[in-house]
Image (cartoon, rainbow, N blue to C red; front, side, top):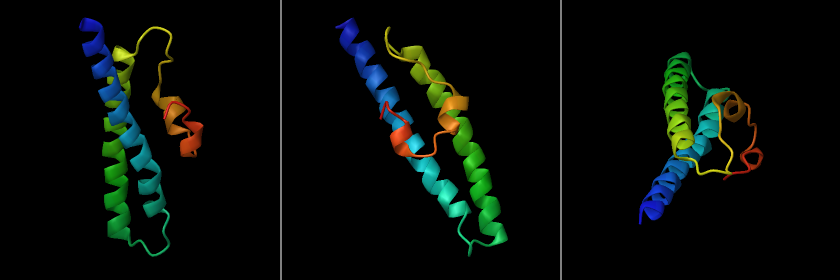
Length: 90
């Protein structure tokens, strides 16, 4: 039962991290649109900063729950993924 609960918490943390990682490129794409005004660009940058902190917290939570034998993550690796297929854990 304890193993099931630990696995459930890990899977939930992984799902949360995946959803945050998937949102990240779309926010970056919005920032690069040519018709994005200054105010909207400023809003998107603030949103990305908040999202970065959230992703860092989700990575820490994931690393605390990761079972033995599975790789841990760090922000420097996750932030440099250019495409979703680079993130082989998804």
